[in-house]
Amino acid sequence: MRLLVCGGAGFIGSNFVRQRLARGDDEIVVLDKLTYAGRRENLQDVADDPRFRFVHGAIEDAAAVAAAIEGAEAVVNFAAETHVDRSIAAPDAFVQTHALGTYVLLEAARERRIRYLQVSTDEVYGSIAHGSFTESSPLEPSSPYSATKAGADLLVASYQRTYGLEAVICRGSNNYGPYQHPEKLIPLMILNALHGDPLPVYGDGANVRNWLFVEDFAAAVAFVLEHGGAGDTYNVGGPDECDNLTVVRRIIELTGADPSLIEFVTDRPGHDRRYSLSSDKIAALGWRAGTRFEEGLERTVAWYRDNAWWWEPVRSGAYRDYYERQYGRRLNDT
Ligand code: NAD
Ligand code: TYD
Image (cartoon, rainbow, N blue to C red; front, side, top):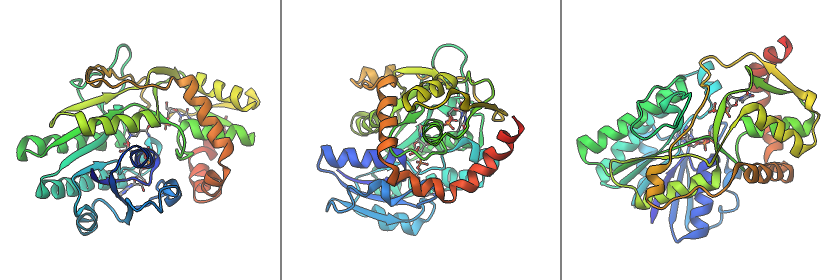
């Protein structure tokens, strides 16, 4: 297939592109704004592949989209601002990319009558105390991140209903694995543990996430692209749930760090207590998440240990200012 992959220089997008090029005979154009989270390094092992082309640009820029979409048979949209804490501090980029950017992409796909896949998140459903969300659960997002992602999903659904766009939505649970920016829980804790830095656990650490190894989610997105019905939404949950404190304690064991590095810090406002997705609908089509959390976490710790070339420039760059703003007061207050 000839694919336009938006946000393909980020964590999940780059894993998707690498996997598609390794497994099939796609031609892929990546359109990416290269925000703090998007990096050419994430795609360096496919950079010389003749089936791959990179376009630097934003999805809300119609001219950049028109240049990148030429010849594409489908659009896969990973492009997003993705960190809940940053959305609480500064929601503007979230509104811009998720609302306006998704609209511009939808218009381009509609004009060319090509298939459109929106990558979304379990966070659009909000928090669930017991049981699991299905695709028909109401959308009750808590943060500016999840609210703008929910808005984008609704816009996608409207284009399918109103204009007959062949659109599908794929909602994943929390991803982890190689190439994830260290602002997120698992890479942050791994790198802090390796450096002997404090491990800042929000609130009581009992919030639960449904962990999904990134290679499994990338494969699920490819699966939905091929098998998903137009107008349908598919949840993709990981095989295991785990509370944050247990995740951090396991990372301490795997890195050999000192358990006294754990610091309980001021909670995130509007912090969702638990996410859990039912994957029954995609499972009925034949999909299974393969990687158990225990195995995926070991592989992830090993990857960060072995790939300092990847995270050293991130950790020493603008991330330091972000870290100070996000954690400086929290850690000093404890
Ligand atoms: P990421 O932050 O690592 O990557 C996002 C990418 O989008 C970056 O390359 C960035 O440069 C690019 N981007 C941002 N704004 C853009 C714009 N306006 N135009 C073009 N490119 C832009 O994010 P990720 O974790 O890889 O998430 C990818 C997608 O998957 C997002 O839509 C996210 O909501 C969704 N998702 C993420 C998770 C998770 O746990 N990380 C779980 C479920 C769903
Ligand atoms: P995160 O990786 O930001 O993903 P999301 O908020 O999208 O689920 O956070 C995962 C969980 O870890 C969430 O409950 C918040 C918590 N957390 C901490 O306790 N400390 C941290 O420093 C971070 C980044 C997250």
